[in-house]
Image (tube, rainbow over all chains, first blue to last red; front, side):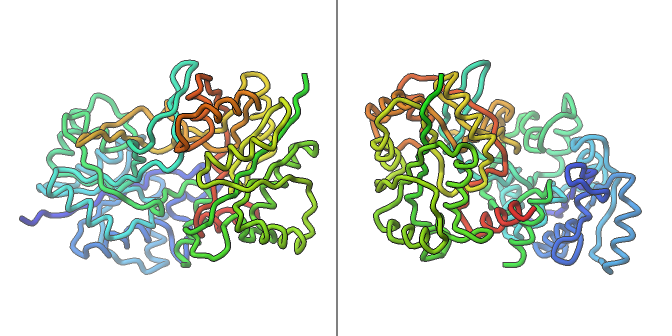
Length: 223
Length: 223
């Protein structure tokens, strides 16, 4: 069975941590803006994918200008974001009017490998959901009131994106969510009663949130 | 009350992940070997500190050679390491024959800030132990058998080094440990019945384990 495939790329952030006037998703990385790398990764996975790019109202003009400047012509639909990540994904989902699979991905994770995107879609087709995560490498402790204790890190996973779902199930989960403070889409999906299927990602699929991350990403791309 | 202060710098690793014949602690970073940066950070914290450097048998000659080459003359004692990290720290502790405070630190964490070292010694003087850790930033999930579920990341901390302790308490904990597979010193200390006091570190205090980490460290040092 073939599913229509969608990707919601969330790029509503204002990049305040970068000490930069330009939102971080537009900062150049190895020759072109971070967000263009991210979109390209999804097209490298599949030229048939339907991309919905969620941008803040302020960013629309910048993005339009950048697309002209860099002659960026990969097809995508633009949607205005909301105040929170939850709101932005909700608005992105409004652009999808068929059943299918939808990957939600952070605009500032440009280094995602197309094979990981593929794995997340495959898992979503099979299990209803495929969420990329990596095992915790460091020793981990849990802090409760004035105590803290070691926990077995081998049971813990750090969640990344893409997080890919059956469209109707994710829409339903967002429509019935009790609040908009969830830190990721898997939590919204889980709250609706679905179980979450994790797939192993890569430590290199970093979220670029500060200038050191940017240097790290440049180093990875120059390899 | 003044305590004698020690630091055990653990540098027994062979650096197989670096695709390099040279153990990673000896790789140059901003002009001199990683391990020299690490030792310097502790001297920058306090010129009176007693440093015990734990090296594998194979590494002794390389380190000796590097100290000559770089005219590195900060005083330190050398101890041969063991097969595991636990064994290496145990052997380092054998070099300490007075009461005092001891910081255990990874040789490949050269970016530790002297103010963080200070905080860990201060906490050890006050609480018996001061373990550097940072809050988990990503969404976190726990995997158990075929299920996984979201956990509240705000309760979880990733452990780094230095981990600083009252000498007699740490020695006792190591001598009575039931096995040598602990992933860090705080776990050994905790297993002996002591409570662990966490202090907040920095995300920049990275452990250099691959070539991308090295590039990231270079970027941080060049700022």
